[in-house]
Image (tube, rainbow, N blue to C red; front, side, top):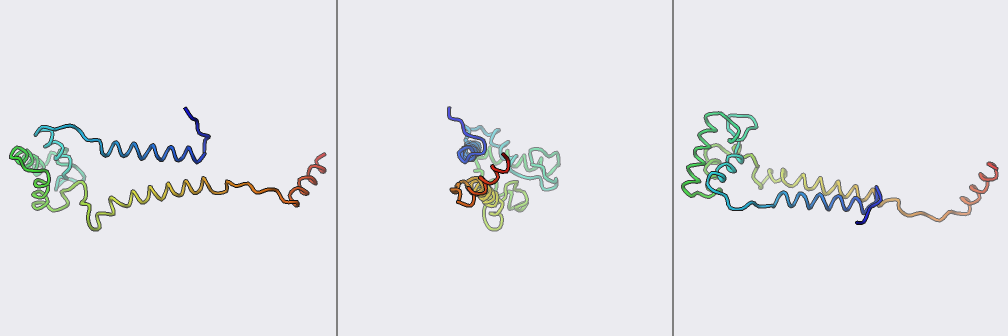
Length: 154
């Protein structure tokens, strides 16, 4: 196994590549087929309770959350797609019912900004690690100064 020197560019590149790979696998790893109950639970986690602050429909004990959970169970059992269920809930409660903001318009910033910040940060780290890596040859004045300091020391 190859070892990297602490603070080396290779070490930082390895760390960044590992993090990107880990995030990609975690984000895109798909589960197998789900039954109607599991699908309803997944959908319940995607919608916010309209009367609760920051709680999903799955977490909330409010009456409106129970109503939405029942609606989701009924629609899943009826064979409605996730998009149809989402659209019906947005129609009834507005986009505030979505825990994940839509990926269009100004809401796109919620999705794009973290990626831009991460890429910019990685660029800054890589630039700071590669800057100043060249060693200039000593000039004649440098050599005279070193020789003079050595004579003074001795």
